[in-house]
Length: 217
Image 1 (cartoon, rainbow, N blue to C red):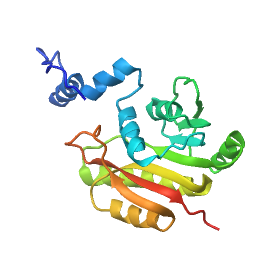
Image 2: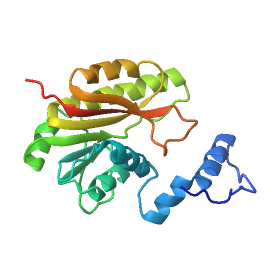
Image 3: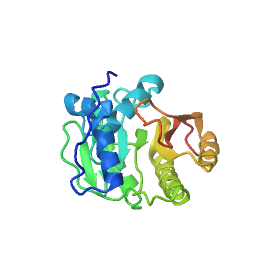
Image 4: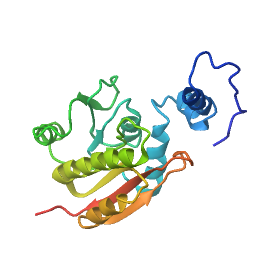
């Protein structure tokens, strides 16, 4: 991806140092620029595009569930990659997206899997999750919180995935993601860590990727 000339902010205009650093990073991020130019709802769309290109997470014609869908970038990718039915779920409202159905709700609701099965006329062929909790700035706490979300997403996926289905979820490097990988290896044929090029180099963000669900009896 071609990097544009560096943009420097001349004045802080009352911003904190952290806000200033974030804005500088956004202004000089080629993925942010590309997302605006290409019509993606977030730079995160490129992460899924890159992972899918190498790993075929989204099967053509398959049923896809996007957990924590806001603002809709990953659901956009699923539609672009010619999925069949795409359902995005988030606690927050998400702007309507052509080719996808958006549900404002909680994926941990006990009634959600059955509701989704009715909408999909069956199970899902991939469950994708770019969910992350609000950060506290305390590395250990943030790690525990994002791993808890990933584990909830996995429990949900194991309930609704069709045999051979795929799963991807965001985690943070910190040690306990190894436990999640070991859990995934029990029920998926291929399991690995992935850090797509669109993930910032200075970020501990990465993804667990599991392909080929071995449906529990």
